[in-house]
Amino acid sequence: MKLLFCCENYPPSVGGVQEVMRQIAERLSSKGHQVTVATSVHGQRSADTMRNGVRVVSFPIAGNWSRGMIGPVDAYQRFVQDGDFDAICIKAAQQWTFDALVDLLPAIRARKVFIPCGFSGLYQRTYKRYFAHMPQWLAQCDALIFYASEYRDIRMAQAHGLKTIHVLPNGADEREFADTDATDLRARLGIPADSYLLLTVGSISGIKGHWEVARAFELASFDRPATLLLNGNVARRSRLGRAWQRMRELALGRPTLSALVLRINARQGSAKRVVLADLPRPDVVQAFKTCDLFVFASYVEYSPLVLFEAAASGTPFLTIPAGNAEEIVRWTGGGVVCPAPVADNGYLQPQPQVLAKAMEALMADPQKRAALGRSGRNAFLEGGFSWAHIADAYERILLGNQPFVVPEATHG
Image (cartoon, rainbow, N blue to C red; front, top):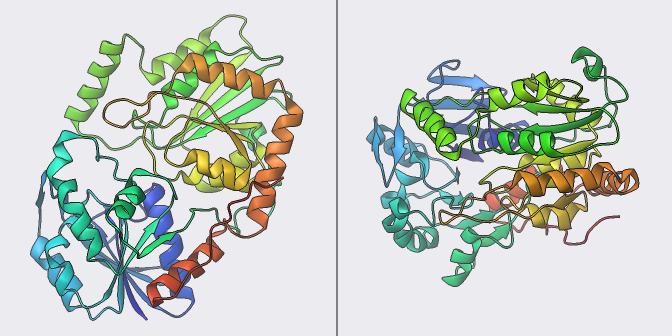
């Protein structure tokens, strides 16, 4: 088949959307399909290039339906319409690769598969008109893929009687997590062998919960030395965006993340240390395998890949109810959910004091952590949460066939 994948960002850009689309695109290419990705321009990638068997075509377009789009939108529309694709798969609403096509959906001859990706702006006034149109746009797609069986996007589709619904999980790479053997990462980072190691992973953007995890770590009490590894690339933000973030920190009366890390590390007599890093991918995988607990406190998510990766590595995880985290706990049995209130805009508000108590409880119970780790690893090994199986399901949907059913039982 001749397949087109449309997403706002694609590798070498880093993020959850990019990783999902890379996994599916490359695996379907390896199965003999002709796969093209339409995406935004990236400084480390030419405008039209081959990457691991996938053709990547970049367009200098930005924006969305609500804010307006800039760039050669008409060229992108012609590319989609005239490309003679058998099927197209578009990931995420509220971004240009979907929004530029909404008026053309009835005219596109290819089979149209859409992954709404959570509707993060559903409760924001900026997107009120946008989501008023969404039901009719969804109805014009041949298949809808949701990562959660209970979330705001799938509820909208169900409320409007749409029948082309498929629920697929995210997952982890069975090649990266073929074993749980850790290398010398602790030694290379100067982390003592007898120290607890807690980990969080995500772009350092202000909304992935790094600050709250660090503050919870500062508040928590442990029975031995402990290290917190805060891993993530610094998200590219405009000067205005950086200024807004600093004003937000001042309004909340709290230090920046860097200042908080310095405060924790400078405390005399403390057995705690924070490492702020942007590790290469192989070391991130090793961090998952060697840490004692993965902690996640992102304000807004859909279906966090990092929770599946923690489960795949046999590492227990502690998470606030970001996206479908509670469902991932049920699917894998690999973690514990810590409560967090929800703001009017739909974003979670992680509470460091609450998170600290949950950290303490898990670190004080090695038997529970071991059981959670075994359960998550077993769920992964059974195959439902590996990218190999998930890519097969995408292929069946793109062909118009039924995929596998997501396992519902908690594993032990």
